[in-house]
Length: 280
Image (tube, rainbow, N blue to C red; front, side, top):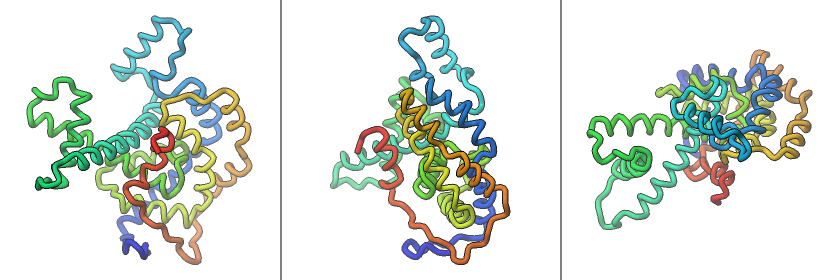
């Protein structure tokens, strides 16, 4: 299978990864998840700081923030969703910083792409680690690698969003995370995954689009307005969604002709984040 414009070939090893991840495109408990956990996230807030109301008890407000900092405040479902959204945001902020770094450099200086990449990462890490200037070089390298690993996963999520729609970040099963977080699960594997899903389980995109608005709220670290939340939730067509979910339980159908996808540019990858943040 080829993308004619980019001349990308999907190898057998890509297909094996793609099929494994493709079966996790829609979580099997989607309705229960939507009516329970997802609804509460939209109502109360996925991100700890934005779930705080002005009239809440001060002890609880302070305690909840302390729990966040020691990383004991969240259940496993919330941790998974927080990590997905944080990863795509990290990739976006990195791309923005890398662009600034590239534009601000001396045009006459010989600076490699790797130098620009490290400078962009260091600029971000300096804001997080107040003792950055005295951290040992070996420790800095480790912190850079940790940041880059999470940022690279964010890029893969953004690629999957480009192919399937933003809602995939919400509706996919945690088994998808197992694949996406693997270092050897490459951008080519993401492409193969999207090709497999679109051709063999075409209804997945329909389900994704029903949850696009949810992703925008999570990216903004915001809350859903009460009337908008009710309208969105009541407007979900569960006959359609259950039908698409049932399709995922059946063996994939071999398409007559494989529909091809065009790989996105770097700028296209983060358009949906930029739009959600109002930074167009």
